Image (cartoon, rainbow, N blue to C red; front, top):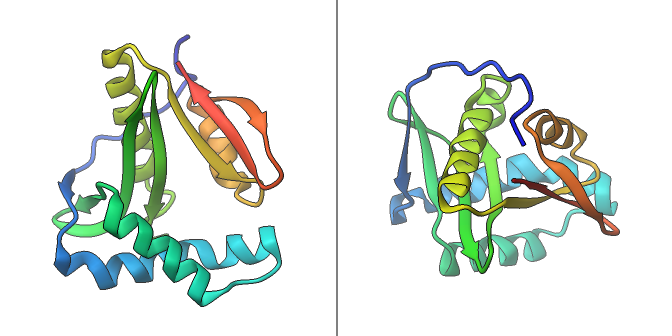
Length: 155
């Protein structure tokens, strides 16, 4: 399957592993990116629950920081899970959204998955229609629909 027609912008972004110094910034990014979506999807925001989810990722997952001109602008977590790559998280600071940064990261991950001969999978909240449309545009297909998330895949 080929990617849909996508304009690729050449930009100066770099990826590096998260460091202890990123903790507060990442926590703020998580809350900023998810607060409205979580409220729209679930009807409430629980600081303790969201902090717990953030802390679990911080402690157990390999978080990658996205830098634009050496400034942190987002993060992602991708893991190989058996016969596919799993995009667990991708968050772009709202002031850097709609600039092609997320698209470039997704394209890099699609190419990585293809190089490994694996599909790339992710899930997206029903409330996050902007991301859902972007993933469709990038060639993802919905393969399942849960109560709160779409499961999507690109081969």
